[in-house]
Image (tube, rainbow, N blue to C red; front, side, top):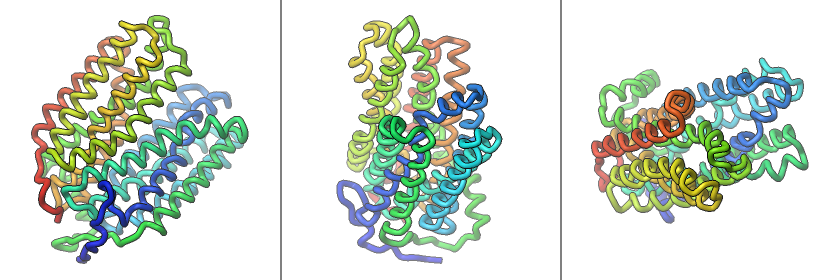
Length: 416
């Protein structure tokens, strides 16, 4: 099947494909609904009388589903088109979230919480990462970093900023369970906007019409047939190790007697990272429209994050529990994490004839980072302490900077 991309779809405003505007709006609303329980769900489960390890198992199974769905989302979008896959994501999310509340949370049934929340994990990647594929095909290659910057802006605005702060206003009025029901409303609104109001078709040109099984196979074999995709995968995993590792290690370190921050202060410090990050997702994306993508990842992403990781340890050790100084350090990390925005453009550019397969590896790598970060934090913290963990993490970002040297891609040509 061969479809011709509409020229109007390539128009952009500040790097955003104008025809996909409502898709970005939908993503921000959808991710707000998806992330709204992150600030309180583990606490709610423990307050029901379940152990911390039981709560952790629920999130672990959820993470397994997210990683698998992240890989499948791009492949399914390649086969059936992103609008259909996004629709499936909304339906799966709503069905299993309602099941999670009615059969798990309300009767306090641990088994049903485990099953329903785990299955819900297949929902959000199908919506969000299918839209990434839509962006990859709808955007001229040279403008792709800017467009991906808008994706991560909307994603982080929803899950990292609004989704984190909204519960502080809703819980006092409608409680934990009421806030969970509110997230269902947000998912339906965001999903409807994304599916019904995003303009244009998923237009692409393919040299041949591959069977679905070939597309699925390519989502695995591309790692072995394209060495640059494999290198990019490692960098994409390294990308968010600080995000998922710090949420395990930093509350222990910063609120210890050695440093002296309160838990409330730590949460505000960490929130500053997301607040700064959303703006710099756009800035680094637009910068990458003008300069080499891999250099932005190398210097503004990897090297920047390596320095930020060290600052997270040495600043509180040197200056004590200085809240505003640590807010600046957290914001500094947010800027560095945004420096990885061009990775979402590099993957499809490395194999323009198999964009769906390339993006599936991008998405899978993001999911794997969600596992590896906490594992590194737990293991290294236990063996080497906080200082050893910090230096190992900084070293991984330096490794990413070296690997980024091998990811130079052609930026001028249109993606085919």
